Length: 114
Image: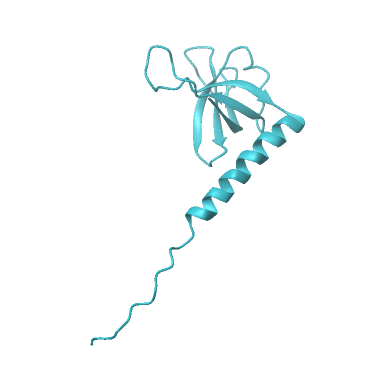
């Protein structure tokens, strides 16, 4: 399972304002459902990802841990692919959010004491 997100900020060890004990790169990511997380970026694509990119985060379970997802950025989407994926998920989320906020209609209470 994969979830799309939008890169808000790359957290790279090459950044002069970041001191790191390793060479891994993370990113602050806004997910399609408005959650915000920091995820590891796969080293094979870490130098290619940019702020504003749409990415796929791997949520498949780790082999040794039941139900614990990998949480690693594995793909960068750009152009029409990025727009199509992001727009579809956001439209779904907005529709779901609207239907969940619909107030339940309750009949007015009668003040009859007969």
